[in-house]
Structure formats: structure tokens, C-alpha cells
Length: 246
Image (cartoon, rainbow, N blue to C red; front, side, top):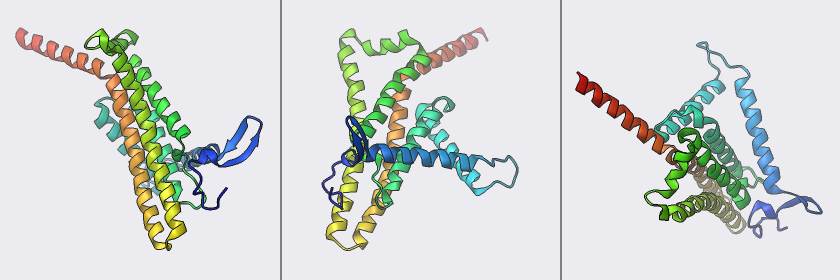
């Protein structure tokens, strides 16, 4: 293993321990580190919650964060954000924390591994029909795949698979390329330029976490769109009937 990590395409190739087919690589280790940090941070910020006027700074930060995420979900889905909050917020915070920790020397973001981004994308892929079926019922949800005609079924299925692949590759490509470019410049240039690049990489990591979460919400919202449209049509019909009666 080279000291600068220039030969490593992803953290999957950094092996800490291996026995037979059981492999403990950097992707797994750093993913668990990120999860441990999130669990510890959640416990620490929520252990002294108060409804009084004297609110601790950490609680204030937590409330602002939760409120911002809820507003983004509501604006994107045009629906009640609470039922999506746990899933979307978890995706965002996991990716954000992993990307931000990339500035720590020796830490390799798990999002620079295609296995991680692929797993996250698969979670979104499964969440779309789950939320869609909960919202519309299985029959109405499956009808979307044969709209406008039954001949569109293979194309609609291909569209679901391709956007899942696009989610995984987009996040992986951005994070992997940023990490490797920073490592190369650190090896061949003075310190100042790589530091500036690391700051830009930090901003990029935050943006990528936001984009992934928003796209996940867009895909999920598309699965519940039909029901909302039918509800709006029923409301308009009821309002029209009431106006006619008056």
C-alpha cells in the first residue's frame, strides 16, 4: 500500500484484516465510525432537551437542522414530511458526516466506495415502491408502470433501474475523484493549494449529500404522486358540487 493512497481506487481496497472470505476493509470500518459518531451526537444533543426559554446551543442547532430538513422535504414532496423524515434525514446525515470527515487526515469517506453508494441507492430504490404502495395501494402503484400503455412497462422498469445506478455513480464519482485529486496535489505541490482544494472538497461533499437526499425525496414523491392528484381531483369535484348546490 502506497503511503499517499494514490494507487487506491476506493477504500474497498484498503484491507485492515482478512481471514478466508471475511474481509474488514476501510469502507466497513469508516462506515461504522460514521454511524458511531451519529449515534453519539444524537445521544449527546438530545439528553438534555428542554421546552423552556433557556435552550442549550446544541438543542438549538438540532432544532434548526430538523426544521430545515422538514421544510425541504415538505417543499419537495408537497406532502406531510413526517413520514419521510426518518429515512431522508438518515441518508443526508450519513452522507454529510462521511463527506465532511474527509478533511480528517487518514480518513477515507465511505462515499468514495461504489459499494457504499450502491447500497444507499438500493435503499432509495426499495423505498420508492414501499412508500408508493403505502400511499396508493399495490394495484394503483403497479398501474403506473403500464402508463400510458402496457408497452411502456419495460421502459418504466429500465427507468427505475437507471436512476438507481445514476444515484450511486454520481455520488461515488464526485467523492472518489475529489479525494484522489487532493492526494495527488498534496504529493506534488506545496501545502497551501491542497488545503484550499480540501475546503472546496468539503463544500462539494455537503452539496453532494444535499443532492442525494433531494433526489431520493423526488423519486419517492413520484411514487405517491398519483394518489395526491386523485385527492386533489376529488377535492375539486366536491367543491364544484358544493358550489352548484349553493
